[in-house]
Every structure is written in structure tokens, then in C-alpha cells.
Amino acid sequence: QGQFVESGGGLVQTGGSLRLSCVTSGFTFSRFTLSWYRQAPGKERDWVGTISHIGSTANYADSVKGRFTISRDNAQNTIYLQMNSLKLEDTAVYYCNRSPTANKWPWGQGTQVTVSS
Image 1 (cartoon, rainbow, N blue to C red):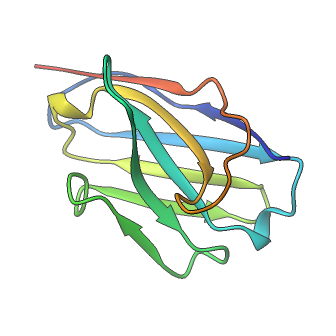
Image 2 (spheres, rainbow, N blue to C red; image 1 turned 90 degrees about the vertical axis):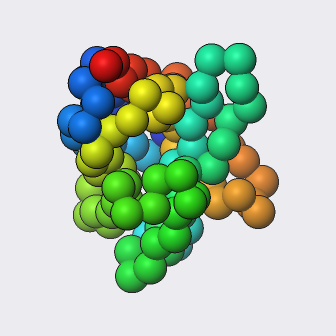
């Protein structure tokens, strides 16, 4: 099973930017498509986007398309989420894990992103 440690969250004003990191271990990183998810207070965990195993393609939820970018560093076993033009509705705890159609490994602690006006 894989393990995930997310970091990089914080408090940011609307329109600002943050870069999240997810350091992974316990599996052959370069073989797996990975995704970011988020969970807002009182809501279910939602998919944010997915990056292919070699990083050549990524796709995103409509709510973040054009503002968020996922990348990965296969040498560092890390994926990233660059978030620009942040909105109040982006406030959530952000997690990484396998792609939506795959069996999930244990969730990490996540990283809190709070967007204020």
C-alpha cells in the first residue's frame, strides 16, 4: 500500500496562489496515475484532477480547470498541485491518492487550504 503526506496548505486571499505537495512512499511511483482530491466542511470528498504515470497528461474537474495545474517529479516520488486565482469555494482539505476508478490506499492527513476575502 502506498502512503501519502500532503503539505503546503495555508491561508490565502481570494485571487492568490498556493502550491501543494504530496510526498509518496511504499509503491513504485512512476507506475501509477495519481490524483488530487478535496473535502470542504460538511461535504463529501471530491476529485480535483489526475496526472498520468509519466506526467504527460492531466485532466481536471470543471471547477478548477484553467486555474489549477498538477505536475509530478518521478525522481522525488512527489506530485504537486499549483493553485492560482483561488476562490472562496476552494477552501477545503486537500488530499492525494490513486485515480478515481482505482482502489484507494489509506488517506493521508491532508493539508488545509483556506481562502479568505
